[in-house]
Image 1 (cartoon, rainbow, N blue to C red):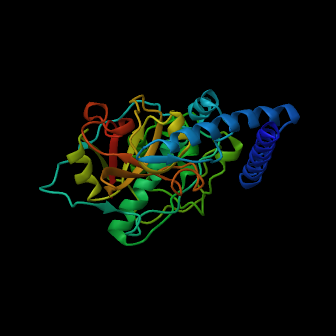
Image 2 (tube, helix red, strand yellow):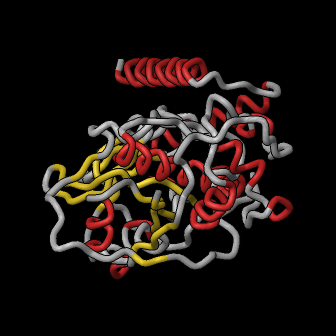
Length: 328
């Protein structure tokens, strides 16, 4: 009887796993080349499922969950990040942020209406362009009280060496350089006028000059934020800030909610947008907007731990090392 019960339980468990995998396939519209490919993805999904369960059973400040990266192992995810999170280029000079007298206890530019909905960069190393437009969108809203979604595709196509820029389209770039290009270009077009397509084409296109630049979207300068929490909080009290992070950890890949306090390095490989800070369940955090769609993380966001204990003051995942914002 005991043997029968154990077998029955295993059978139910296997059926449950298969059903959950099928639900994941349907939810994220996964496609497979053949049966062997499907089997390989299931094996990786199963490994991640067990990892999620193990982490969530511990007493951590954050939780993991399935998303569209659940069919990838760590090597797959890092390969994806090398394609989609490339940070490359020579940095041009900028001004330096001056810390104000004091900063409020908490800031959230999302609730203040200064942040557009989470976007999806897809299969293109254009994270730098999404971080750039996010910072520009915040600055524009704060100054002109108008939330405009700016065009990442224009940056990917046009902010290139052949067009007076210093970035590399789907092969990476830097936010400071993109701010400089927007200055030289006299502004940026809207997402609607110059829509994003490189997430599916996986490459940049020819630069188009047929769209209309948004009035007053010219970036007159950009400001680098010193690598300290006081400087970052002071800057965020003014506006959203472009940052770079290391994002290749398995826990980051499968992050779902809570304050991410897991050990995280400083090999910067992904551009994102800091949109606020505060405290949650006794843990100080920075709220960060990603560009991996709203199905990743906490509706597209992650809460990174805040404090000098992270990477000897360089910030969780190195987020204080390469921070900047535009001035309109």
